[in-house]
Image 1: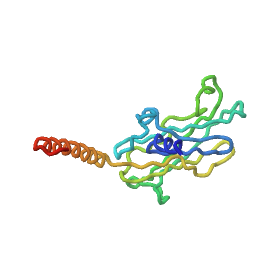
Image 2 (image 1 turned 90 degrees about the vertical axis):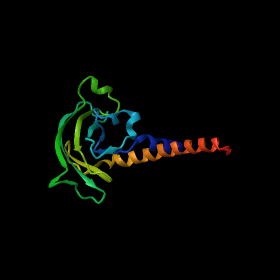
Image 3 (image 1 turned 30 degrees about the vertical axis):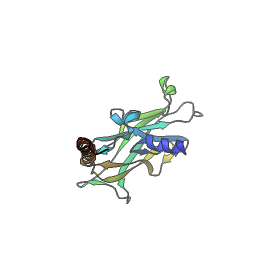
Image 4 (image 1 turned 180 degrees about the horizontal axis):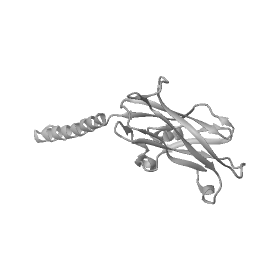
Length: 189
């Protein structure tokens, strides 16, 4: 029970899903240029003016000794209803390629991902107070994959956090003021 609570608290505002396609494990993560890449800052939410970008990682199973192939992928951003999100008249989505290989000395020592691509999913700014789900499909290896759920996250408005901070500071100052007032009037606190 404690492990579940700790895992939930430490994972942050974005949930990344591990997907299996054949023997390969596909997962996304925070972009290495983002402050949320570091473990302590996972809790930071995405705001409407944040540039949202995720890295893509693929783990090749150990039973495949020499593998080198270029996969293409297509991604799209959907809301909770399953509709593709639009910015103006354009759909939020894209495509790209990734070189999937386990050749090379340094690739064997990467802990989670055998290969990957930085900033594979660039979503840029999104509307606040909404929840989003990122889907992607891959082509290569043995054909075409289904649409895989990559990540789910929500975008917050910075002003709501400013107001919460204001309320906390106001209540602290008000309690100190009234405690000093009661103490000065001789009323026991």
